Length: 318
Image (cartoon, rainbow, N blue to C red; front, side):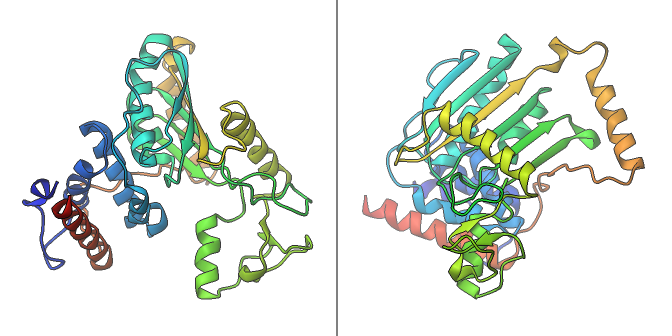
Protein backbone atom coordinates (compact mmCIF):
# COMPACT_ATOMS: atom_id res chain seq x y z
CA UNK A 1 0.00 0.00 0.00
CA UNK A 2 2.85 2.36 0.84
CA UNK A 3 4.51 1.70 -2.56
CA UNK A 4 1.64 3.45 -4.39
CA UNK A 5 2.52 6.65 -2.56
CA UNK A 6 6.25 6.82 -3.26
CA UNK A 7 5.94 9.26 -6.15
CA UNK A 8 3.67 11.65 -4.25
CA UNK A 9 4.82 14.77 -2.38
CA UNK A 10 6.45 13.74 0.88
CA UNK A 11 6.48 17.11 2.64
CA UNK A 12 3.82 19.72 3.25
CA UNK A 13 6.16 22.19 1.56
CA UNK A 14 5.82 20.22 -1.70
CA UNK A 15 3.04 21.34 -4.00
CA UNK A 16 -0.09 19.27 -3.65
CA UNK A 17 -2.64 19.84 -6.41
CA UNK A 18 -6.18 18.51 -6.57
CA UNK A 19 -5.11 15.91 -9.15
CA UNK A 20 -2.07 14.72 -7.17
CA UNK A 21 -4.12 14.50 -4.00
CA UNK A 22 -6.83 12.41 -5.69
CA UNK A 23 -4.21 10.16 -7.29
CA UNK A 24 -2.61 9.55 -3.90
CA UNK A 25 -5.89 8.78 -2.16
CA UNK A 26 -7.58 6.68 -4.87
CA UNK A 27 -5.60 3.42 -4.37
CA UNK A 28 -6.42 3.48 -0.66
CA UNK A 29 -10.20 3.61 -0.91
CA UNK A 30 -10.88 -0.09 -1.42
CA UNK A 31 -12.58 0.26 -4.79
CA UNK A 32 -11.69 -0.37 -8.42
CA UNK A 33 -9.58 2.26 -10.14
CA UNK A 34 -12.40 4.32 -11.65
CA UNK A 35 -14.59 4.33 -8.55
CA UNK A 36 -11.61 4.96 -6.28
CA UNK A 37 -10.58 7.98 -8.32
CA UNK A 38 -14.11 9.43 -8.30
CA UNK A 39 -14.45 8.95 -4.54
CA UNK A 40 -11.01 10.48 -3.95
CA UNK A 41 -11.90 13.48 -6.12
CA UNK A 42 -15.08 13.96 -4.09
CA UNK A 43 -13.10 14.02 -0.83
CA UNK A 44 -10.54 16.48 -2.19
CA UNK A 45 -13.30 18.70 -3.59
CA UNK A 46 -15.00 18.85 -0.19
CA UNK A 47 -11.72 19.89 1.42
CA UNK A 48 -11.23 22.65 -1.16
CA UNK A 49 -14.77 23.86 -0.45
CA UNK A 50 -13.92 24.16 3.25
CA UNK A 51 -16.02 21.14 4.23
CA UNK A 52 -13.55 18.85 6.04
CA UNK A 53 -16.33 16.77 7.61
CA UNK A 54 -17.30 15.78 4.06
CA UNK A 55 -13.67 15.39 3.06
CA UNK A 56 -10.74 13.65 4.72
CA UNK A 57 -12.65 13.24 8.00
CA UNK A 58 -14.62 10.48 6.25
CA UNK A 59 -11.41 8.44 6.05
CA UNK A 60 -12.00 7.55 9.71
CA UNK A 61 -14.45 4.96 8.36
CA UNK A 62 -12.11 3.50 5.76
CA UNK A 63 -11.17 0.34 7.65
CA UNK A 64 -12.14 -3.14 6.61
CA UNK A 65 -11.63 -5.21 3.51
CA UNK A 66 -12.90 -4.12 0.12
CA UNK A 67 -16.43 -5.29 -0.58
CA UNK A 68 -17.42 -4.85 -4.24
CA UNK A 69 -20.81 -3.20 -4.45
CA UNK A 70 -21.55 -3.73 -8.14
CA UNK A 71 -20.65 -7.20 -9.43
CA UNK A 72 -22.79 -7.32 -12.61
CA UNK A 73 -24.48 -4.88 -15.03
CA UNK A 74 -27.34 -3.11 -13.30
CA UNK A 75 -30.94 -3.77 -14.34
CA UNK A 76 -33.41 -0.89 -14.66
CA UNK A 77 -34.01 -0.95 -10.90
CA UNK A 78 -31.83 -2.50 -8.24
CA UNK A 79 -31.08 -2.57 -4.53
CA UNK A 80 -27.50 -2.83 -3.32
CA UNK A 81 -26.17 -3.39 0.21
CA UNK A 82 -23.22 -1.15 1.06
CA UNK A 83 -22.83 -2.28 4.68
CA UNK A 84 -19.19 -2.76 5.55
CA UNK A 85 -17.89 -0.77 2.58
CA UNK A 86 -16.44 2.72 2.41
CA UNK A 87 -19.43 4.93 1.66
CA UNK A 88 -17.86 7.36 -0.88
CA UNK A 89 -16.59 4.37 -2.87
CA UNK A 90 -20.10 2.87 -2.79
CA UNK A 91 -21.62 6.06 -4.20
CA UNK A 92 -18.93 6.17 -6.86
CA UNK A 93 -19.50 2.55 -7.90
CA UNK A 94 -23.26 3.00 -8.07
CA UNK A 95 -23.13 6.24 -10.06
CA UNK A 96 -20.65 4.84 -12.55
CA UNK A 97 -22.72 1.66 -12.97
CA UNK A 98 -25.86 3.71 -13.64
CA UNK A 99 -24.35 5.18 -16.81
CA UNK A 100 -24.36 1.94 -18.88
CA UNK A 101 -27.67 0.96 -17.26
CA UNK A 102 -29.42 4.12 -18.44
CA UNK A 103 -27.84 3.70 -21.88
CA UNK A 104 -29.59 0.33 -22.08
CA UNK A 105 -32.89 1.02 -20.34
CA UNK A 106 -33.45 4.76 -20.81
CA UNK A 107 -34.03 5.08 -17.07
CA UNK A 108 -32.32 3.32 -14.19
CA UNK A 109 -32.57 3.58 -10.41
CA UNK A 110 -30.45 2.26 -7.56
CA UNK A 111 -31.52 1.97 -3.92
CA UNK A 112 -28.52 1.69 -1.60
CA UNK A 113 -28.68 0.52 2.00
CA UNK A 114 -26.13 0.28 4.80
CA UNK A 115 -24.44 3.51 3.65
CA UNK A 116 -22.55 5.52 6.23
CA UNK A 117 -21.49 9.16 5.84
CA UNK A 118 -20.45 9.97 2.29
CA UNK A 119 -20.45 13.76 2.15
CA UNK A 120 -21.93 15.39 -0.95
CA UNK A 121 -24.12 14.02 -3.74
CA UNK A 122 -22.93 16.48 -6.40
CA UNK A 123 -19.67 14.75 -7.46
CA UNK A 124 -21.47 11.48 -8.15
CA UNK A 125 -24.43 13.01 -9.97
CA UNK A 126 -22.10 15.03 -12.21
CA UNK A 127 -20.83 11.74 -13.65
CA UNK A 128 -24.35 10.94 -14.84
CA UNK A 129 -24.79 14.42 -16.33
CA UNK A 130 -21.43 14.30 -18.09
CA UNK A 131 -22.56 11.09 -19.80
CA UNK A 132 -25.48 13.03 -21.35
CA UNK A 133 -28.19 12.12 -18.87
CA UNK A 134 -30.11 13.62 -15.95
CA UNK A 135 -29.18 12.51 -12.46
CA UNK A 136 -31.18 12.79 -9.26
CA UNK A 137 -30.11 11.63 -5.82
CA UNK A 138 -31.33 11.71 -2.25
CA UNK A 139 -30.23 10.26 1.07
CA UNK A 140 -32.08 9.69 4.30
CA UNK A 141 -30.24 10.13 7.58
CA UNK A 142 -30.79 9.48 11.30
CA UNK A 143 -33.83 11.31 12.65
CA UNK A 144 -32.93 14.80 13.84
CA UNK A 145 -35.18 17.15 11.83
CA UNK A 146 -38.67 18.06 13.01
CA UNK A 147 -41.63 18.45 10.66
CA UNK A 148 -42.68 22.03 9.93
CA UNK A 149 -44.31 23.21 13.14
CA UNK A 150 -43.28 20.02 14.92
CA UNK A 151 -41.61 19.51 18.28
CA UNK A 152 -39.12 16.66 17.76
CA UNK A 153 -36.97 15.10 15.06
CA UNK A 154 -38.60 12.52 12.80
CA UNK A 155 -36.47 12.52 9.62
CA UNK A 156 -32.86 13.33 8.85
CA UNK A 157 -31.23 16.29 7.14
CA UNK A 158 -32.14 14.30 4.00
CA UNK A 159 -30.17 15.98 1.20
CA UNK A 160 -31.26 16.05 -2.43
CA UNK A 161 -29.07 16.53 -5.48
CA UNK A 162 -29.66 17.07 -9.19
CA UNK A 163 -27.43 17.24 -12.25
CA UNK A 164 -28.03 17.80 -15.97
CA UNK A 165 -26.19 19.23 -18.96
CA UNK A 166 -22.54 20.01 -19.58
CA UNK A 167 -20.24 22.94 -20.17
CA UNK A 168 -21.61 26.37 -19.30
CA UNK A 169 -25.14 24.94 -19.26
CA UNK A 170 -24.33 22.37 -16.59
CA UNK A 171 -26.89 22.48 -13.79
CA UNK A 172 -25.86 20.87 -10.50
CA UNK A 173 -27.14 21.43 -7.01
CA UNK A 174 -26.84 19.56 -3.75
CA UNK A 175 -28.57 20.74 -0.59
CA UNK A 176 -29.92 19.49 2.71
CA UNK A 177 -33.67 19.78 3.25
CA UNK A 178 -32.93 21.02 6.78
CA UNK A 179 -32.08 24.63 7.56
CA UNK A 180 -28.50 23.69 8.47
CA UNK A 181 -26.53 20.47 8.24
CA UNK A 182 -25.42 18.25 11.10
CA UNK A 183 -21.84 19.24 10.26
CA UNK A 184 -22.76 22.90 10.81
CA UNK A 185 -24.41 22.04 14.13
CA UNK A 186 -21.34 20.07 15.29
CA UNK A 187 -19.07 22.95 14.30
CA UNK A 188 -21.26 25.40 16.26
CA UNK A 189 -21.14 23.16 19.31
CA UNK A 190 -17.36 23.07 19.12
CA UNK A 191 -16.96 26.83 18.76
CA UNK A 192 -19.96 27.97 20.77
CA UNK A 193 -21.22 30.08 17.84
CA UNK A 194 -24.93 30.87 17.82
CA UNK A 195 -27.12 29.04 15.31
CA UNK A 196 -28.96 31.02 12.63
CA UNK A 197 -32.47 32.00 13.63
CA UNK A 198 -35.15 29.47 12.80
CA UNK A 199 -32.86 26.47 12.37
CA UNK A 200 -33.18 24.52 15.66
CA UNK A 201 -35.53 23.74 18.52
CA UNK A 202 -34.81 22.63 22.08
CA UNK A 203 -36.21 19.61 23.94
CA UNK A 204 -39.44 21.52 24.63
CA UNK A 205 -39.99 22.31 20.95
CA UNK A 206 -39.07 25.98 21.30
CA UNK A 207 -36.75 27.68 18.83
CA UNK A 208 -33.19 28.13 20.09
CA UNK A 209 -29.97 29.63 18.84
CA UNK A 210 -27.86 27.79 21.42
CA UNK A 211 -26.20 24.77 19.74
CA UNK A 212 -25.87 23.04 23.12
CA UNK A 213 -29.65 23.15 23.55
CA UNK A 214 -30.54 22.00 20.03
CA UNK A 215 -32.60 18.81 20.29
CA UNK A 216 -33.74 18.90 16.66
CA UNK A 217 -33.21 20.93 13.51
CA UNK A 218 -35.93 22.69 11.54
CA UNK A 219 -36.66 22.14 7.83
CA UNK A 220 -35.29 24.54 5.23
CA UNK A 221 -37.95 27.01 4.10
CA UNK A 222 -40.71 25.76 6.36
CA UNK A 223 -43.40 23.56 4.81
CA UNK A 224 -41.71 23.12 1.42
CA UNK A 225 -38.45 21.90 2.97
CA UNK A 226 -40.42 19.69 5.32
CA UNK A 227 -42.26 18.03 2.43
CA UNK A 228 -39.02 17.60 0.48
CA UNK A 229 -37.46 15.91 3.51
CA UNK A 230 -40.50 13.66 3.81
CA UNK A 231 -40.24 12.73 0.11
CA UNK A 232 -36.59 11.80 0.58
CA UNK A 233 -37.45 9.69 3.62
CA UNK A 234 -39.96 7.70 1.57
CA UNK A 235 -37.63 7.23 -1.42
CA UNK A 236 -34.30 6.64 0.31
CA UNK A 237 -35.52 5.33 3.67
CA UNK A 238 -38.86 3.56 3.30
CA UNK A 239 -38.69 2.27 -0.29
CA UNK A 240 -35.11 1.10 0.12
CA UNK A 241 -35.91 -0.59 3.43
CA UNK A 242 -33.16 1.36 5.18
CA UNK A 243 -35.35 3.40 7.56
CA UNK A 244 -34.92 2.12 11.09
CA UNK A 245 -31.94 -0.06 10.24
CA UNK A 246 -29.03 0.46 12.67
CA UNK A 247 -26.12 -0.10 10.27
CA UNK A 248 -26.39 2.88 7.94
CA UNK A 249 -28.60 5.08 5.82
CA UNK A 250 -30.37 4.65 2.51
CA UNK A 251 -29.53 6.44 -0.73
CA UNK A 252 -31.61 6.72 -3.89
CA UNK A 253 -29.96 7.43 -7.27
CA UNK A 254 -31.89 7.88 -10.50
CA UNK A 255 -30.59 8.38 -14.04
CA UNK A 256 -32.78 9.39 -16.99
CA UNK A 257 -31.91 9.65 -20.68
CA UNK A 258 -34.01 12.64 -21.86
CA UNK A 259 -33.09 11.92 -25.49
CA UNK A 260 -35.50 8.96 -25.29
CA UNK A 261 -38.48 11.23 -24.55
CA UNK A 262 -37.74 14.80 -25.63
CA UNK A 263 -38.85 16.18 -28.97
CA UNK A 264 -35.98 18.08 -30.54
CA UNK A 265 -32.65 18.80 -28.88
CA UNK A 266 -33.21 18.82 -25.13
CA UNK A 267 -29.76 20.31 -24.54
CA UNK A 268 -30.72 23.33 -26.63
CA UNK A 269 -33.87 23.75 -24.56
CA UNK A 270 -31.77 23.55 -21.40
CA UNK A 271 -29.46 26.23 -22.77
CA UNK A 272 -32.45 28.49 -23.52
CA UNK A 273 -33.73 27.93 -20.00
CA UNK A 274 -30.38 28.94 -18.58
CA UNK A 275 -30.42 32.13 -20.65
CA UNK A 276 -33.88 33.09 -19.44
CA UNK A 277 -32.90 32.29 -15.85
CA UNK A 278 -29.83 34.50 -16.01
CA UNK A 279 -31.73 37.32 -17.75
CA UNK A 280 -34.11 37.27 -14.79
CA UNK A 281 -31.02 37.73 -12.56
CA UNK A 282 -31.23 34.24 -11.16
CA UNK A 283 -28.21 32.21 -10.10
CA UNK A 284 -27.62 29.09 -12.19
CA UNK A 285 -26.09 26.52 -9.81
CA UNK A 286 -23.27 24.52 -11.35
CA UNK A 287 -21.22 23.04 -8.49
CA UNK A 288 -18.22 22.99 -10.81
CA UNK A 289 -15.33 20.68 -9.93
CA UNK A 290 -11.96 22.24 -9.23
CA UNK A 291 -9.35 22.28 -11.98
CA UNK A 292 -6.82 19.41 -11.66
CA UNK A 293 -3.96 21.86 -11.10
CA UNK A 294 -5.72 23.68 -8.24
CA UNK A 295 -3.20 23.87 -5.38
CA UNK A 296 -4.27 22.62 -1.98
CA UNK A 297 -4.21 25.27 0.77
CA UNK A 298 -1.44 24.58 3.31
CA UNK A 299 -3.85 23.36 6.00
CA UNK A 300 -5.47 20.90 3.57
CA UNK A 301 -2.05 19.68 2.41
CA UNK A 302 -1.14 19.17 6.06
CA UNK A 303 -4.27 17.08 6.66
CA UNK A 304 -3.65 15.00 3.54
CA UNK A 305 -0.01 14.34 4.44
CA UNK A 306 -1.10 13.29 7.92
CA UNK A 307 -3.58 10.82 6.52
CA UNK A 308 -1.11 9.35 4.06
CA UNK A 309 1.41 8.90 6.87
CA UNK A 310 -1.19 7.08 8.96
CA UNK A 311 -1.87 4.75 6.02
CA UNK A 312 1.87 4.11 5.55
CA UNK A 313 2.19 3.20 9.23
CA UNK A 314 -0.83 0.90 9.07
CA UNK A 315 0.53 -0.78 5.94
CA UNK A 316 3.92 -1.35 7.57
CA UNK A 317 2.28 -3.09 10.53
CA UNK A 318 0.16 -5.47 8.42
